[in-house]
Image (cartoon, rainbow, N blue to C red; front, side):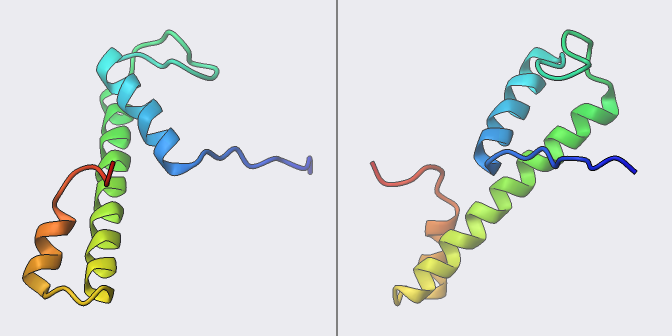
Length: 85
């Protein structure tokens, strides 16, 4: 059996790539580059993007609780998009 290598990306880079592909509605990388996304593939990308959003929200929520914020304040913080600039 051949030794296979794992292909991986930093999650926010993969999410950025998936968002670009969803907007363009075509594969932009790999063997299928230039071919149209199927409904299934578009759905996978949507699911991944939603998952990234969920992870960011729960991370912000738990960090706010650790910082001593109330649950209501933490919930409000977790729903904001973007970080401090």
